[in-house]
Image (cartoon, rainbow, N blue to C red):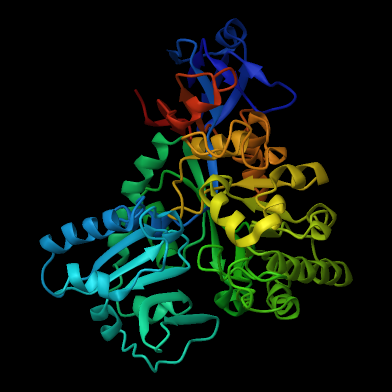
Length: 529
């Protein structure tokens, strides 16, 4: 039995929001209360720990993260730079150390943020610095790739290669492939890159865990695929999995899941099945998010809609028949509209067939037509959003969406309508650090204070309590785990973090530098200082 006392505990339990002590046994919380009361009630062998007045919060959950990709990205060239020149310098540095013929992989570039050249880059620029290696760099959005000529050749991509469905090989005015691959065209190169082994993925995830603990994360909703799931199962079997993982499965597997009778929630307190994940559109950066009206700078482009609401409903029906909830990637206003249409059909189908009304989600919800904003609450659809995207994307959103940005990253709008929010990061698209997400949610500003003291569309800002709830209670609800995770209360799993700062009384700027001093999962310290 453990007794943590002399603490500033924010429980997020509305019936008992503050406490100074917490009693833990067998991985669960026995009681939360005041020092003297809990000390008197603790019997037998008790390990007492004076917390020195530090702040204790429930462990935070990233409700949208690619765990395999994040772990592996830590080994790649960091291409998230302010200039194209610096990105190329980093790739050149890696190329100098690489064996001839070995792949050079990187992630994070965003031409919209480059101050020296905002045009799309080209294969020739990589050829000049890495003539002896295939190079492939994924964009920050993960919806676009930049390949050099050697990589294109290995993928057998020529100027005449047709565009795949829902993707595009970018070509210049003469019809030559530029080296930029959009959406599904990325797979043409990616399938030629040697896959990491399951053991390599396990190692990457295990190393990532310790980084996530320092960020205050005790759980994630993982959106990677089969190999990630296999690695997670193996880590769990070896008792090396020290994060709560809600595992989503790809829509391509819905027929197999239906045949097996797999249900949402199957698993245990460490690893359990979440939803079936589908993609409705692309992303803002590469102009592939599906929009009702064209992009400001491309009057003929309305993005890529992967399917309409009717086709999505067919996937939803197969999932619902066996008790699997759905979650769908939707960035653009048209994409969100089509998903909501499919969910409206799905709710009617659930009712007609006596099926449970499951907790369906939309991932990202980046821009919504005003007429669709109330439908999340009306249909009881969870808005799974990533506040860190707003300051990252705000200038691009203004350029490409114009006045529609007033309805982008609209957390306050959804909360006011009564929708449930779950917050994450989409790492490795953004940092998984939830404190950066909290800063974005309460300020709508970048770290440097831009665009203004008031923030970008400040009417969408949240209070700290509201934003924190989306990383705890909201994330737990989205994972069907609200009876064991998301708050510090009797009977709940003992997942918590310790901070030196009281974030409720600190300047929001301090959120940019805060990290967990200690992290407890299942009643055991996985990080302690």
